[in-house]
Each structure stands twice: as C-alpha cells, then as structure tokens.
Amino acid sequence: MFHHRLIGVFAGLAGAVGVATLAVGAHAVTGANLDVAGNVLLFHAAALLALAGAGDRPLRGLSALLFVAGCLLFSGDLIFKAAMARSLFPMAAPSGGVALILGWLVVAVGSLFPRRS
Image 1 (cartoon, rainbow, N blue to C red):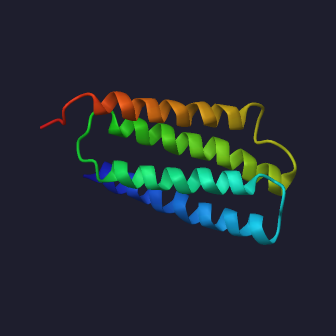
Image 2: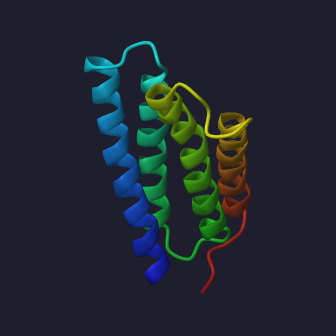
C-alpha cells in the first residue's frame, strides 16, 4: 500500500541524512552533537524500514509517525544548533526524544495484538 512506500521513503531519507550528518560531524564540525543526531537518524531509519515491511500490524502507522516526528525534532534541533548556533524552538530536542520513546512504546503495544486480516 501507499503507507508502506511512504514509510520506506522516510527510512531512506533518515538513513541518508544520518550518514551525511555523521560525515560532517567527523570532518567539519566536531563537538556539536552531530554524532548523536546521526546515530539517532540511522537507528530509526532501520526501525522505519522494519515498519515499512511489517504489513498491517496494529499501530504501525502511529509508530512510524512518532519516529519521523521524533527524528525531525530531536536530530533536526541538534543539526540546526550546529549550523545556526541556536535551537529550532525551546524544548525541540526533548519533545523529539519523547516522541521517539512513545514510538517505541507504541511498537511494543502494537506487537501484543494479532495482525489485521
């Protein structure tokens, strides 16, 4: 379905930006938490890819949405701070972290239910 492909697109983008962020952190801007941002993106790119192939698991879409929002807020804020020396908005990174945690909890809860037919 379309949702599977959209989650896959986000997985690919998160992976690409994660690798690029790690490269910039290693070669150009050190000490700016870019390694943290890159790792969060890469780990969640793999999780999104797994969700894309999970079929009609309950709560799959909500988990993916929380992962995407969390990556955008958490890693986006760290990357923005490195580039612009200021935050996206107050509490952007912590809000993203909460979204990522909630995404994982939704994965856990969704795994308790049988697949939809």
